[in-house]
Structures are given as C-alpha cells and as structure tokens.
Image (cartoon, rainbow over the protein chains, first blue to last red):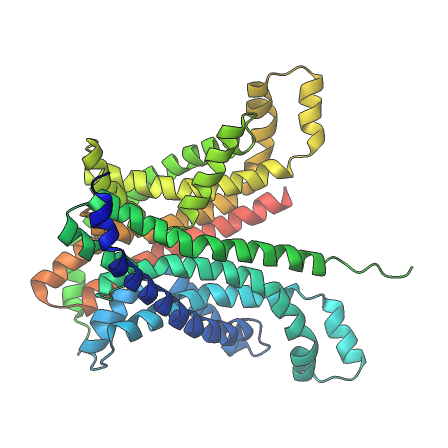
Amino acid sequence: MTSAPTLLSFLPVLLRGAAVTLEVTAASACVAFLLAMLVGTARVSRVAPLRAIATAYVEILRGTSALIQLYYLFFILPVLGIETTPMEAAALGLGLTFSAYGAEVVRAGILGVDRGQWDAARALGMPHSLAFRRIIAPQAFATMLAPFGNLLVELLKSTSLVSLITLTDLTFSGAQVITSTGKPGQTWGAVLLLYFLMCFPLAQAVRSLEKRFTVYREPVRRPA
Amino acid sequence: MTFDTHLAVQILPFLLRGLVVTIEATLAGFVFALAGGLVLALGYRAKSLPARTVSRSLVEFLRNTPLLVQLYFLFYGLPLLGIRFSAMITGVLGLGIYYSAYIAEVYRGGVDAVPRGQWEAAQALRLSHGQTWWRIILPQAIPPVIPVLGNYLIGMFKETPLLAMITIPELLSAARQITGMTYRYTEPYTMVALIFLAISYSTSLLFRRLERNVGTS
C-alpha cells in the first residue's frame, strides 16, 4: 500500500486530537456527574416543586438534540454577553445533555433500593436524611456504576460533536488531515479505528463491572 | 438582546420544510435499522461460526464509534469505491446502519426471553429452522420489545441534526441557512430546539402509554 506512509506520518496529528477528545470527555463527565447527582436526587425528592423542576430539566434536555444544545451555548451565550471558550462551551453543553440521562440513572438507582431498607432505617430511629445518606445512597450508588459507565461510552462518542464548534478533537483533526492528504476514505477509517480503540476497552470494563455487581446484587436468602 | 417573535414566526414555514426532510430521514433510517437489526440478531444465533463472529464484531464496531464519523466515512469514502448515492440516501444508510447495531441488541433481548421450551417444541414438531424463527420465536420475541424500539426511534430523531453535516437540507440545515442570511442565532436555534422538544416529548408520552398497555396485557 503506497498510501500507508503518508497517512502514518499524520498519526501524531490524530493522536493529539484524540488527547483533546479524552480531555473533553473528562471535563464534560465531571459536569454531567455532579449535575446528575443533584437533579437525580431532586427527581425523587419529597418536596413537590423541586421534583417538578428536576423533571422539567430532564425532559427538556432529553427532548432536544445534543448538537442543538451545543450550538445554542456556542452561538447564543456570546450574544447574551457571556464569553466562553470552545472547551468551556463543549464541557458545559455535553455535560448538561448527559446530566439529564445521568439523572435518570440516579433516580432509577435510588428507587431500585428495596423499600424495606427505608422501613428498617426508620425502625432504627434514623431520620429521613440520615437514612438516605447512610443506608439508601450507598446501595443505590453501587447499582448506578454500570449504567454510568455505559453513559460514559456514549459521551466519549458524542464528543465528536465538539468538532462542529471548532474544537480540535479527533474528528476535527481527521478533517484537517484530509485537507493535507486528500484521502478521506482512509483518514475517516483511521479516525473510526482510533475511536474504537478508546471506546471498546471502556465498554468491556463496564461489562465486567456489570457482571460483578450483578453477583453482588443477588438477593440474600432470608432464614425462613 | 431580545427574542424577535415576528422573525420566529416568519422563519417557521422555512424550518418546517426542513422538518419534513428530518422526518423522512428518521422514518426511512428506522425502517432500515429494523431490518438491519433483525439480520444482525439472526446472525447472533446463526449455526455458522463466521456469521456469528461477523455480526458480533460489526455490532461492537458500530456501537463503539461515533455516528458523525461513520457518516463522514460513508459520505466521503463510498464515492472512492465507485459507489455514488445522493446525500439523503447516504444519510439514511448511515443512520440505519448505526442504529441496526442497537436494535440488534434489543431483538436479542427479546429472543433470549423466549423460553427454551419453545425452541425444543418447534424441534419436536419438526419445524424447519426458518419456520421456527418466523412462526414461533419472532412473534413472541418482538411485541414485548416494541416500547424499547420506540425509544430508539426517538433517539434516532434527535441524532438527525448530524445529517446537516453531510449537506442534507434537514431542520438544522434550514436554521443554519437562516442564521447565515439574518445573522440572528437566537430565533432559529430556539425554534429548532422547541420543534425537537415538541415532537420527541409527545412521541415519548405516546410510547410510555404503549409500554403500560404492553405491560398489562
């Protein structure tokens, strides 16, 4: 193959792009995780207005498209006089989008804890908030890990959208390489492969995590 | 900075024309994904090892790479192989291929939930392999997963803005054209967001109701 050396010589460009991709993933994952915890807990709150706000948040963010949310932040925040760097817009945009999905994971995790745990905590005289912190949250968190991992894979893939708001991630670098090499087919193929090399190990790790926690969650046999 | 309601109303017909393309692409892509997913799901349980390996690896690859880059690959790569499709067909193909990997997993879940005894009974009745699939397994495997398929339909609808990047004149494309002409960002993008919200939220309510009905039957 005569084309291999030319494409290979551009590998450092693609790898630098991949580093930016990982950076965006990490930054937006942090934003998403924190917001998801807050909103997800609010989704099952006993305070009705809080619940309503959290529900609206989730429905609005899940109901619109990730790319449109990114555009919104990137083009409209400056109009409103809020200056953000592309990296900040990207982390905030993807963070917001994925926080809505993450909030549903948190909600499902909390609701998934056996009701008996709440009753037992109350029987032991624990106030609601203490029972939530000490008894419910730790058990819920364990069940959230695998779904969070799956979302992380989806997030990593979605970071390719940030190339559309001028961030030089892996996808953007791919486009740059094509302007120099004029080989779109091979370059996009190489970009796909690099994404796969990042996502697949992550997905496999999540799968093994899932298996471990399914074992952990197997119901304890109670004495008759 | 204010929201110009007059402009928002003025651009609506233009956006709706883009929406028609969006919906066409979604539906066509979904039909393709339903069929492609079925082929992959059948591949999972094929007797031949190569068929199983190919369908497994294809699903892994499709699920672990971004749709945007897959679209670029098809849009810019296929013509090099001498295959020339219109942007719209490439887009539908891209959406369809990507989602067939997810839908294959949905079908697989449905097939796995069919009790083993059904397979054995079909064998005992000397039904052919094809008959077992079409008459016995799929009619039991698919109805329970219809709500999940619905969620993927909505998911696919929300991914269609990516088609703007391969020159398909869908909803986001229309909005971008308007921003190019008017230098106004707030109105077009807000309208696009509202249109997406209205359609995906109402559709998700519909599927939630469907899910409840499937649950009770």
